[in-house]
Image (cartoon, rainbow, N blue to C red; front, side):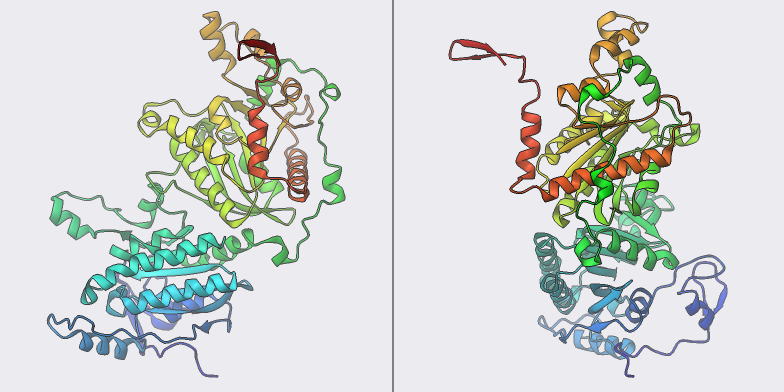
Length: 572
């Protein structure tokens, strides 16, 4: 059988690792996917090697077009551009710096565009731009995802401004993918710089970077020579980019294929997988109380104490127990990743969903690392980014609320806490996909509301939802902290009272005596109830989800208020 890949040059029997300097036997290194067994350094791969590692065996079909670069400018530096092209083609067996085609990962089809750094440093020229653009267009025509693996020093100088234009050319193709509701994935490999980093490598919906890879607009040497500033050792590395909110995840090469497979499965439409999403008998009988009279009275202060127990299931507990195949995404694409909010994609009863949760913890170390579930602005921006991606893909959103409130610290204020919360509230009103929220513990003020602008809001029986903490209310209105129990009872924060007010649409019953709580049972109840709400929303005829969500919140506070119109007053 003839290979679909260009002929690669014969490798030497031994390769010296540029990470640790050890000699690696070439065949052993190949079996290790090009990862040094001594230090873990990820050696660069050819496009053919990368495709062979990612795609299902025998599934790759090259793009049915050949595009060859020409010397439009008559460019000559130390040698003529046509001579450089000829040498690169001879050395790599490729026409240019990218290999494109149709493939499958875990049986799921997608289009691939894989760059090869050996060809003139993986530089972006007109031929590369045309090939990647055609690959994205083919993805739109077929209605399947796109994966671009980048490895490049930037735009190709020998093609001048035409190379620069490829940044926008490929970006407009990605815009068409967004319009079509299709997922685009960027696999960032070492190195990715310049015009590639500043366009399609970071314009995709999901950014995964290979361990040890580097990415930036300007290289470290250029930066140091320009601004005369010493850079940190980990500058522009994968871990640096993750910590600064620039990428969704860092993956070891051995785990990369599995992670991509999980992401594709978690975001794949149910009808494509053959899974049934119509309401099941289990969902129809989900434990959900919609009549306040069916709920026993619960003392508000006792509810506060119960909601705050560190033994209660956290967002990640619910995700692990009620959802399948959760793939977490990170970062706000601006500055940082907030660990108080987890966000990503999973499946619930066969239905793809985006899941966003406020995460506390059980032990002191986790509580501290998660900032006690008090999100920073970066957390709300990450959540809104994932929700908007879900909306483009036509995937429902599920939010799990459990927070004392948004973090009130100096850094949060400097980074725009009020703006981040406001943008999340407004952004959720624009989502055209079903949104269901469950308040599982504390629903504290605007920090909770920022993730609770939903078509349907549920809560556990001993959760609470309030404009302010009882302690805060007591300090302001009673001028002491001792009146917190009185404040709690006055604020109307219990599930029964909130159901009466229409603030929540249903209550999940729970025991008052279980300690620790029965996490599997609570998770099953949450999953069944959320799935039921989603099925009701999806199966309702002529329901405009945006209008439904806006109308729901439009009505709050109108009943019982004094309205004055044209000189007349009436109580509603």
